[in-house]
Length: 140
Picture 1 (cartoon, helix red, strand yellow):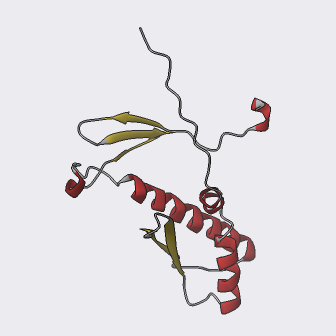
Picture 2: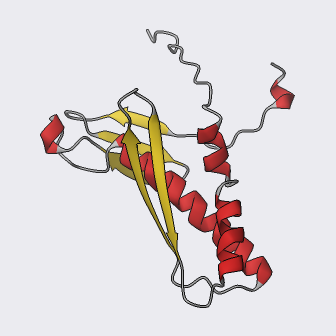
């Protein structure tokens, strides 16, 4: 693949800490991820699937607010609730429920549902992205 044909969308560095706790750096932001105590972690931060749902929810809310701002719509208060399920056939499914203020009409709600289906993170997850994993050269 030609490097000129790609665009970097995001980058993160994750450094493993004690137990399952992970220190995450992305740009100027630092936070932690961990597993809950019930899975052997120290519950020092959200679990990876929780971070994934947070990312999807944040992208959804941001995109809807951008769209509404262009249209002059007041969505307040806007809430995106997400649940990730694993089905018996080992497929995953996300339930995403939007709620917004009373000023939003049924027609506007229908349009917001269309927009939510096209948010960048929604499209990325829907396409089942390819993940390429390699080892860094051994340091001496």
